[in-house]
Picture 1 (spheres, protein in one colour):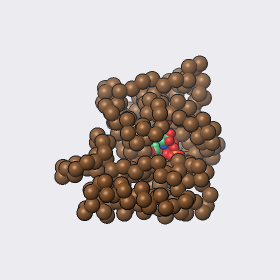
Picture 2: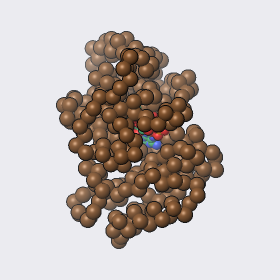
Picture 3: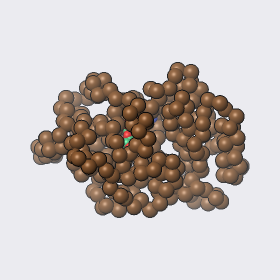
Picture 4: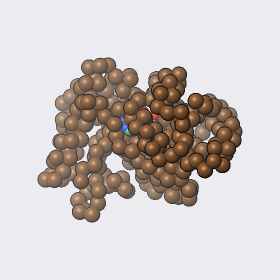
Length: 282
Ligand SMILES: Nc1ncnc2c1ncn2[C@@H]1O[C@H](COP(=O)(O)OP(=O)(O)OP(=O)(O)O)[C@@H](O)[C@H]1O
Ligand SMILES: CC(C)(CO)[C@@H](O)C(=O)[O-]
Ligand code: BAL
């Protein structure tokens, strides 16, 4: 398997591959790979001749030092896992210096308000950091298609917006959420949960399912109220937000419009670890 840590070498390798008329997929990750990531890689392999998986824990998208320091890192294990998947995979695992040089800073983006709610509200500067690294990866790899998980649904919509605003010629493909048997969305940060909390964290998905079943008959504000009061009684989880929002604009739902698609979004802390999830409601 080819593993690159320099942009220049990756670019020159891909230029040669492209001459063979091979289509290229890109799967950006922060490593500590799990079956959620693998589902993106499989989808990319099914649609492209070559798939670049980037592994880079991007410092500029972390608003909390502690979260960045404790983020799981396992490059060797990640490479082994990808090697088992296919020999059509290329790994790009650059250093912070290779990406940012001396100035570890984000660019500033205009995302049409998509970044002002939920993750954007609670993680200051997060989406400027995501935009900065994703734009750089897209421009470096120049893929035909890039793959992102719906687990980070707000991020997916923001990347779609960035590509549209910057007129970047790459297709952005959203992929469904992979879950544990108890419904917990697979996430690298789950590694930091105790076995007991991981089991109890099935409650997050159960809450989303309950919100979906209430959605037919109850107002958004009544469902929000119900979720807040349920979590208020639970000593294991600390609810950061629960929102019902329009899937495209991400604005909180006021009155249901029949032609709009709505989604429930949730962020909770458990064992000091921040977990997010979402579910389409209609
Ligand atoms: N359970 C999942 N199902 C589908 N896609 C996923 C899942 N988890 C992560 N992804 C996607 O994989 C890509 C890389 O995500 P990332 O490396 O941040 O992993 P992660 O598990 O989301 O980690 P964390 O939530 O701890 O940041 C993103 O596009 C993300 O949406
Ligand atoms: C897209 C991404 C790899 C950018 O660092 C990250 O936000 C993630 O893993 O979802
Ligand atoms: N998967 C989203 C990246 C982050 O939490 O920073």
